[in-house]
Length: 393
Ligand SMILES: Cc1ncc(COP(=O)(O)O)c(C=O)c1O
Image (tube, rainbow, N blue to C red; front, side, top):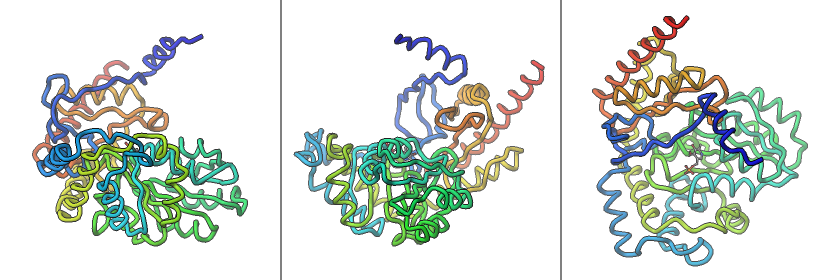
């Protein structure tokens, strides 16, 4: 019966066993792992705010005033004035009527989707949407229809086939977390309107980065008044923790009554909220951060391509270098680590079989000298791996 070790052994045999790598310093362009100073090139700390003095001061100030834990769930004693202020500012940032903050992005998706949809609904979901979306869809009991990644022709075909004119929703990531490409939102919204479906965009990786004011993918396409449910996280560009939904007042009120991960979970601590508020202010006041981030990411993509690799030229800080099999991705990652560069291997089930990769991601605080070294070392590691495999054959 309960043979956990056997399963773990089989994961190990397929190079799918996972271990934790512990950081021993701040989440900066350089950090320390296993006692070694390494260039961190896979962080979601896109704007480099995790170790920003203003962010730390906001946390310390708030801890001194309010203490540490939130002390309760949002509906009992865990909601502070700070939560209210953040929700109001997020709603304004996203240009919606209202917003509601959860303790994590995962809880936001699972709670919201399962609160809104039920077995009478059909949900159309991009094949590469984040796991928390898939879990939310499953928990809702709605009919789940997966369409090919960013393929609006397939989406339309599936809507015609499966939408029974009842209630339904199209959900997509704004910027895809493991591929860094951007969803074709204008076409998705058009199809949703044509077929009377709601739209939900998970913009965990676009918020703070895309759009004129940094508010994300929806604003990048100027669709603020067209997308029904805007989801975001506070854990990436915001360098904090938490997630939120922004949208119409009635929908947000409904979520507050129905989303179990909101109701039955302790509220984010006041200092976490203060950090998010500080990040929001920086995002709005310092557009040069996202500009510099995107310039560096474009440069890095271009350099990889100029050196014989093939990565898409999407406009985001997430750069997938697909290598295929899990063992190969692990080898790349290990060899880069030996060169003091940390880029973890991303393997199934996080990505589909055969698409294991190194997920590079750029931070606004990286400098070109370090990025250049990363390109050189990637090139060298690629050559070493190729030479080794030719020798074995
Ligand atoms: C697209 C997407 N949605 C949701 C989440 C979950 O957010 P969090 O890490 O804040 O729980 C993530 C983060 O991993 C993500 O990449």
